[in-house]
Figure (cartoon, rainbow, N blue to C red):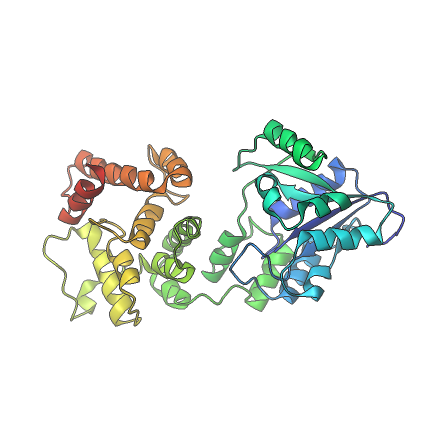
Length: 379
């Protein structure tokens, strides 16, 4: 590691790193070259102030970072925020490193999405008194660069630096869910990080995951993981319980390859088409075999394929997430994904329309719950 106290250009890169992934590595390398850095200090948080999910233990996250950047002499992994415990605030971190390197030019790396929210951070003026923001554009996020520059000049009397690199989409949430379902993550994290995650079973604590891995093949497990990831994007906006969302999405297809004849007490309502049967059987198994008593979760599983009139927000979310998860490929799905980001209720309406049109074009029987949902939301 490079520890020369007289360095000229240093960047600080903070985050949860839960876990560190390939895009983090690419970003660090681009920052080193683009800013001509002498050193970059990576500082994993103890507890991020803006997130409710508890990250993996600090020891694991530190060790994954050390493995990801092993051999890169310009990278230092710091436990400053972790040792301080409590919530990690950027102004304290940059003031600490500025005190260690008072004669150096100090940068703090942020994504374009964070730039927009920077004014809401704790003591942004103190952050900028110690460092200059170095901003990375994100492939999945539009940033009004000129508007942000004007705002910064007017509000803080200071400029930020924009790196030429555009960060690609890479989700730590997706890595954790894939890992919990024993799906491949080799295309998302460095090999040595993947090995460490598997050896230590870092993200294996997902309720009902063992059951799901027994009853679903890998292709359907991947679909399930994608539905979870898609649904989690809307948890905060829709004010839903994260655990309920994960459970509903995880179990929505649990009966896809099961035989209703194996469940003697299961009573399938009349008129349910074959394509929808697994949803009703899945709700039955969730309640009577897995012991889930939450009626909202049971409903979300039962109606994830057909929909129904007057759905709960949770049921709406699982219905939509199932239709637009990242591996779905049909005409119009990209439009639905765009709506999902901007207007969830409109996205629901368009998903119901797509479902009914698809069934009509295929000349397939349309279940009465689907028609009820269409009439309730689309007319």
